Image (cartoon, rainbow, N blue to C red; front, side, top):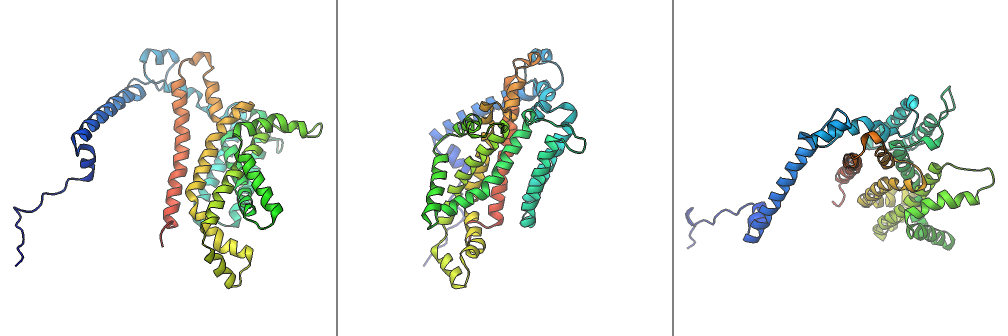
Length: 357
């Protein structure tokens, strides 16, 4: 005869998992208390520096007297960080260009707009943005490319670089798997050569070595050369990402498509690529974030991106000694954009039910 245990003899409730992790043993208890104490101490002093004792409006003397963060410095210089040396009277064009690019990025994140028309829209908008920034038509004064700097350069390099590198990288990935030896070895040489050298060396070669091979009288601005370098760099890394996705597709997918009468290119477009690109969403976004952050390297060839203009801000004699605030501001902007890309990629994976049957 089976007896049912009474409530008095029932097993005690199991404590929550987080309590076991933090205080499950004497060692965990001591480590948790010490860590939480250090975290509380750091958070309190960060609050005092960043908010309680901070100066949001004022002068450098006010900041030094307060002893906290000098956000007044950022308030005074943020426009220079965004637009750099672009003429002040023409900055409305930079605002318009950034607005157009930002609006198109937002539209591109919505799956209902994914079509061939979106590709055409990107071509038109990028061309319009370059024309607006350069001027020379409809009465707009010409602004030399050497004056383009700040966030404008960072966005242009990363956005245009990724737009051009994406199809090239996909072609290289397919070429590396091709049965034609010439195409396969050309793709392998491109990928391995670019991935085997640092981006800095590619930028220096594009800035210093490339002009030596150009005809006399032909010259490109450093920004254009840097853009070419980023396209080469991004295409090589994306090619390996795409190749990983293509290799993950079972052979039966190809055989099933061929049995239905589909040719090679329809099989790629309708069956293989949608699955392969979906599988490597995290790796793609990781490459996007890396390229976006690597735009700061163009300072070595004399082009001022967002981080470059932040460094230039520190040379103002009226605001010496506030480098911490400048770099915190720059890091916050980079983190916000990079984290936004990461959040969107996770949402896209969830919407596409990646990894589920």
